[in-house]
Length: 147
Image (cartoon, rainbow, N blue to C red; front, side, top):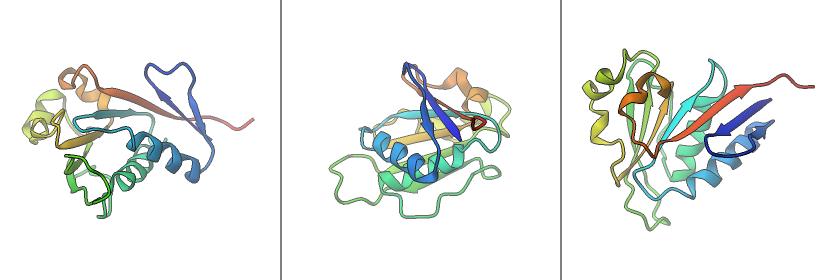
């Protein structure tokens, strides 16, 4: 079982299946207007990449979303004609191998972070917290033992 905690929410969301994770990601994706930064944290295997895959799909990403552990950043085009939005890019960053905020700048992430044409999801975001916008949405994913 996983719990998903969004900073500012009083009660964590408990997700017990991939279907529930997908619904949660889809609901959140529908609220996006452009420029949002989602900062994901949690232990290895907590579901950060799975959440990101569902979230990207809900935004209209057609390409395969994989963890950018070694490429550090992947930019996917959003191809959803139904959305009357200005969002064209879904940016997926894995900060696990970054050595801090300067590394995030070096890979060109600031060209997308907070920009109205992009939505950015950063895994292991606590490693680059210093350069993230004040309005960053922090999402913590945790594995909890079933009772």
